[in-house]
Length: 196
Image (cartoon, rainbow, N blue to C red; front, side, top):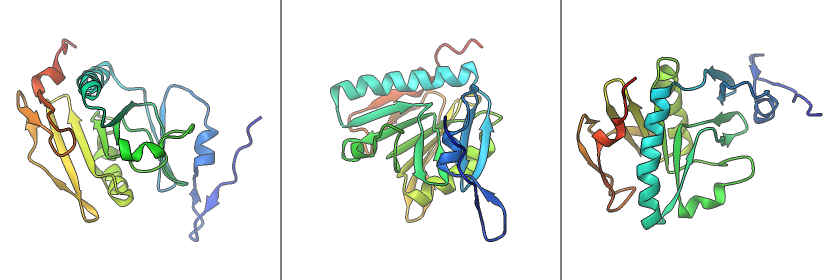
């Protein structure tokens, strides 16, 4: 039987949750994440969200078959950045040089790229909390994908904060040479099958 961990208390007396607390949460279909010791709970993703992730993963998976430069992982997978920071990005990329971060528990350290699909229940966390967290731990690239306005916002770590690159919208052809040499895709392919 798994025991619940003793919660940390900050000097101010507030409770700080840890990986052990996170691991003790029963699986109820919701997404739990711990950011700086605080818990964030989200409902299961909507169908449009899942289609976007599936389409993007499919395109990138085919690319990696011909260019084995790393690996992609889909949520749910734990990214353990520290004892009090455990998140579940929608999609992430680990370059070959970071494969040592893969463990039985999940990804133990910062991926090269984290992608989040925006939804009404997670947009504030994805736009405010997570960029700060990912920058702090050295995630080099962060993408926000908005299926409502059909746009991808890309951020690249510069020093200790993200620099926003020009957004890709509608049917832009995207070249991602810095991350994925020789990979170009039509953004319209990302939104296909959106009859919902």
